[in-house]
Length: 170
Image (tube, rainbow, N blue to C red; front, side):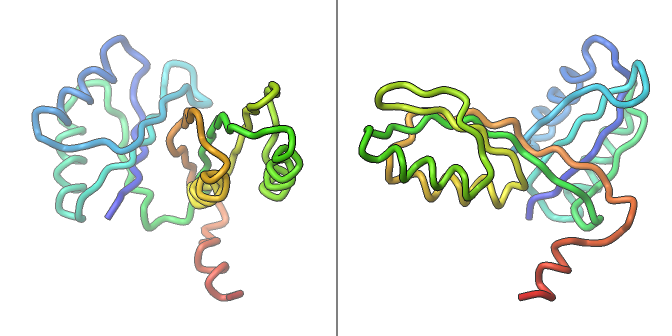
């Protein structure tokens, strides 16, 4: 199972290096990593997606708290939260295929950010499922390059789990 961890850290030189060193020493893997400043000056939020069971995540959390500059570690996996990812994707498409690709881009509420004779670059933002679905649909046109940010996440203040609501409507 994949777990999403939100880690608040003091914005100091070497914090990310110490965290990655911890993961390497303990043979833990990081599937996705997003780092950026928070609403408080001097504090950054690191969102990590890590594989493992609950015991592994508890071990990771304990080890993270032993590092200096770590302020808070939360496992957001079972917590109602908003998740987003950004993908830039370069798609091969001939002039004849362009209208089909543009139609797919519009359906996914993505944006074309660059256009050339036989290629276009689309910007897709959404939950990880949307990103994966878009990638699967345009695969047959020919994906030339992909750059993804990794997942970022914030806890929903409403505490409403939209995944639960989606399942109810189905």
